[in-house]
Length: 145
Image (cartoon, rainbow, N blue to C red; front, top):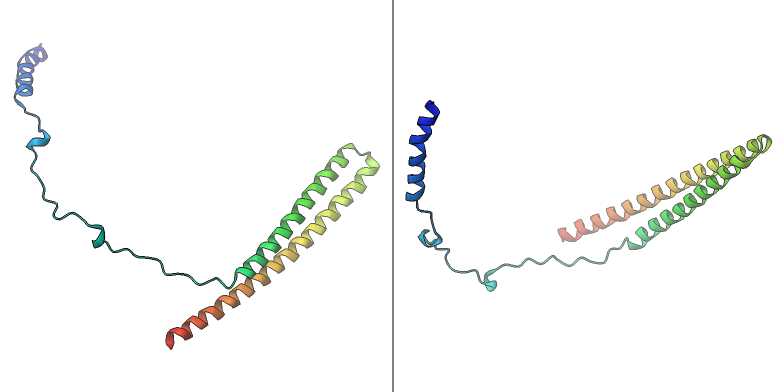
């Protein structure tokens, strides 16, 4: 009951306020002075300095070549393992042991190839580090002069 009385008194007030409130229009807003427009001639454009040819491109190509050789060996290993797994499924009990031995030999050969790859990659990265150190020393020497 009290809510109904409250609604009867508040509702006309809300309606009256809604008619009296004027909404802000763009014309009523104050203008802001932004100053002079920016001209293209006033902008400072920074250009990256040219980089000299990278001397270690041949080295990185050598690393890529070693990586590609390893990927080829890995693909061969996976193909052999799949082939041997198929042979294992269709083999008799006597032949299964021979196929398992071939799988072990294939794994051992791949592990050896992986170790060789790791050694080659490590030596290639050491050579790259040496070249980087020499370049750094040369740059430090040229800055001092």
